[in-house]
Image (spheres, rainbow, N blue to C red):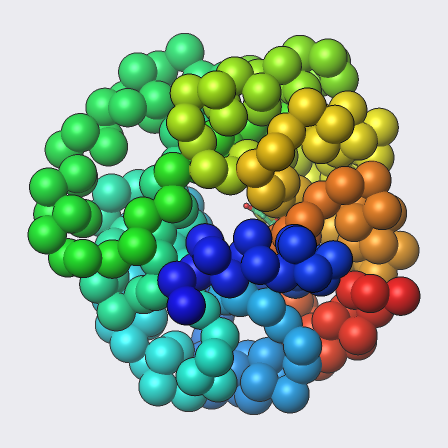
Length: 241
Ligand code: 1GP
């Protein structure tokens, strides 16, 4: 089954999903992290980051060889160079609250033909940077002003859906001090019919569960699992509780 169909099927069945985010530049021991993921009820693995040094293609190839076969590996690219046709899908993301046309559609135009030619599943996604209580790398790299007001965030997400995006990602930024607030998630979810992803600064099961209760369909965790990959199983178990 295609990745997007699997996600919507899970949502229809009331299943909340945990995505483990792996940054190729920060993942030292792929085999060990994969072992932790394989023994858990993780739903998908995202691959991405803001660096350029480590080849994503090689990383995805190794990852696919050690991960459980049913686990989709999805590209969450920080730049067009972060591509691998070995992945199962790519989040083709547009940073909706950016004033830089490169981040809205520019880089996408240059990458479109090669992505199309690869045959990889493309998931158009509205990516929205929300205030996370500190300046995060995504803010430094994109120069986007994070959104702070609930109604503005929800309206931006709705506009994303109306523009044809098939997912919305509320991003507080990796290592954010404050994850996306539950009232922001709830106000956004209320307006959407497409799947809602939430990430940035989530490092406890309580924060993850609060995001799910507020309406997140998928919670993404990167930073915390980089420090404590052994926690992946415990978080995955807490998803439905
Ligand atoms: C970053 O939302 C993701 O793009 C995950 O954030 O690394 O803080 O978990 P963390």
